[in-house]
Image 1 (cartoon, rainbow, N blue to C red):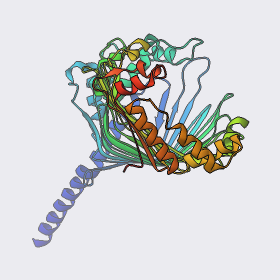
Image 2: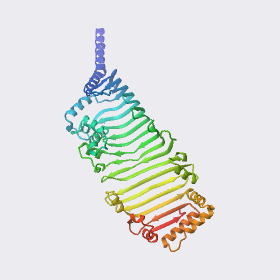
Image 3: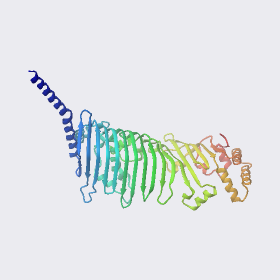
Image 4: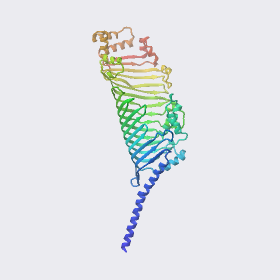
Length: 514
């Protein structure tokens, strides 16, 4: 009796194990393949996709597809086919109902809210990507994205331009495009920006080559990464090891780029809602600082030029104008032999320069409603010569930035400071050589010119400070602090009555002050 009972128990366990294996492995894998095949069947005409293997484990929630091949071609006289291969794609916790949910969204897009997401997977890892087209080849070693998701409401927004309209807008024309011409392109781009989201992405080993009758270009990036992109808002991104080469444009390398946060959600929303393009659509855009480090550029047939780096931003817009912005570049080295004309090279030679290392920065904030602007953190530095710094406050500067409105602007305060490295001595030597006299004699002549009588108290004090600086050049500071804001155009006519204008501007010049 015991033997049949034991056999029955073992048989029951075997059936349970087999059923469990079928329920945990075979059936979910079949369901995954069915969903995958269903998605492939819904691809547009002219697009075909095949794969070698497809596996899904319910225990690990991991789907793996290998040997993916895509072929796409337009059904017209010039098909221009595109072929792509993906060696492997691993998907952690895929949304197995994605295909059906997307089909339901296509049937009723208005049922989705603007911020309602359609999850794709927790993590997607793609390796061994290659794409070939008539004029382009691309490879990507690996690509990883976390928490990828779509927002169907944006991607399926009613009234979006057709693909034919997009193609027509993308074709180059003999005349510059109007805002109306750009509307289909920008609207589709806005839908793309509002229609996707992810927590993080990492990409390595990108290589792209373009070969047309007009352009041959190779483009490579060692690594790219991004964080927190969601409906037109991103926390940040980086690019490392970028190089480009072209016989038409030369070569360019960039060691690293770091992009700060940006926000274009509001303008993109207005675009997909069909609002007519205008400068007011810029309102709400916020662009964080973007830093570029280790730049080398070489034009065809020219020596390479190097820069330590540059930055753009932060930048913000209001009332259709950029109300705050900053730009800077540092350690841009120019050799005398790289200058484009003999006159510039002669200028370097007369100053005794073989090269110049230049840095520049400009930043401002603009209160459009209050008609006030502030220039700050602005300077020009030539390591071999010195640094010139500027700050200024302007009033009566409204949003209408034409020539007339600029002419109506008023200066409330300004400060210009020179920190000398060798500029003064180089100019004195140059002036002495041109006058045919000793440098010290020329210095005394210039100092004497700075002691003109009856110049008024402000100019007299300024002449004395300039004379002190020429005698012993370290720093020279010019400050304008008028009792009341004065028209900027007044500065252009300052030569007519310098003493009166100096008093009106509150001129103060100091030499060698900390």
